[in-house]
Image (tube, rainbow, N blue to C red; front, side):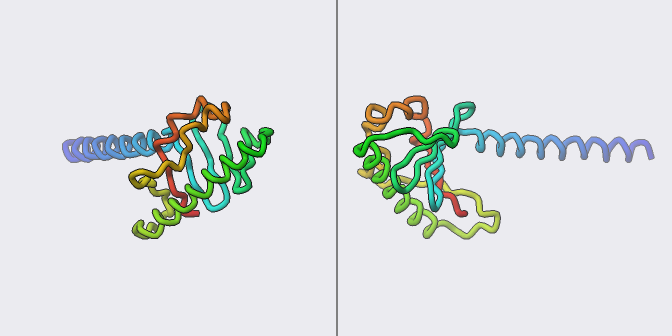
Length: 141
């Protein structure tokens, strides 16, 4: 009986270790810097920095505080928002269904630059978020 209990305990430990690794992988993926493209906004995430939110009208917020932008900066963000929305729709159309509604990585077509190359120079608040530019996610919600 003792051997059976030891065997069951050993199997439980092996299973628990596997689950723990899966959870760590999930947490690591969630913690990666990224831009999430949802229906009504772009969210730029890079922990531990505050999130940047870009709205369809070109307005920008950092931690829910609106950042004053001039007309050319707003136009730049509006264009970026529009291009990312098109990429999001194309990505979600081609993606297989997912009942868990997990986000899908956006593959940018060759020659397209949805993030303007001069974004950091024109809007300096993005300078600490450049590592998010290569990880675009289409939100299913």
